[in-house]
Image 1 (tube, rainbow, N blue to C red):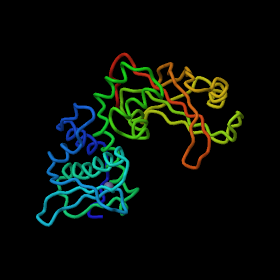
Image 2: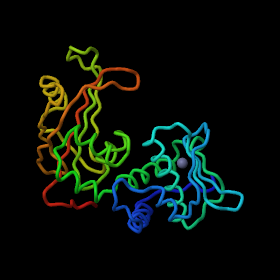
Image 3: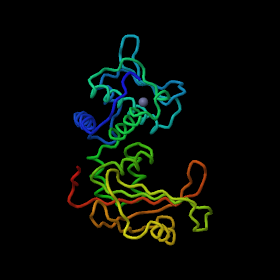
Image 4: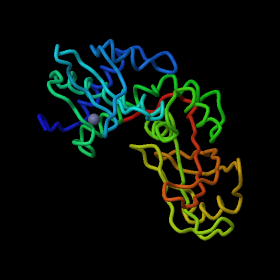
Length: 264
Ligand SMILES: [Zn+2]
């Protein structure tokens, strides 16, 4: 690594200032235009082993390459990820010197930061929150927004947990059999940088979710988010993970009417 940056809060703020200087008001965001505004002269598919590539052409122009045949939302994410490397470099006061390959740096701090910035570029908080205000929390909205922003459902779920003015909660309950309520394991994810407490034990909450599960089943979960009692409307559906295992996947969120939430 040329520079192993520590990404702290001031750096996060520098990135956010940079992002605010970009025009992210149209949906879907024109990521190619943003890349162009940052000096990228060519974005093209190539037969790559990795998802993407940021480098310089022989005449020193910035170029982005993405994997031929990748799904459109994957390509968009890859371009946004490479754009994020440019933004990180500029926020650090350096220029991209050499090629940046995703496989060589997977899992390092810059890779994670680039993925995070890619999400912010493709699903900006401002437009997302205004759309969420007019929609019911649940899968239909997640799927509609994923299509609208041309991102994967995974990216959309990730953004719902990241944006500061949304209180999101997600359950993935792995089941041993289709008809049984036997829980193999479960994961609960919620808005980052927040504290969440269920008003009843999570195991009881999960039993209640499974008892009323079904396609489009709506659940209401009482939680304490940062010391405030909130009721979160959630929706569940059956899904299969990458290993083909069955899970009941519940997603929901709440937008406090006060608009913004104080973040320390
Ligand atoms: Zn990368």
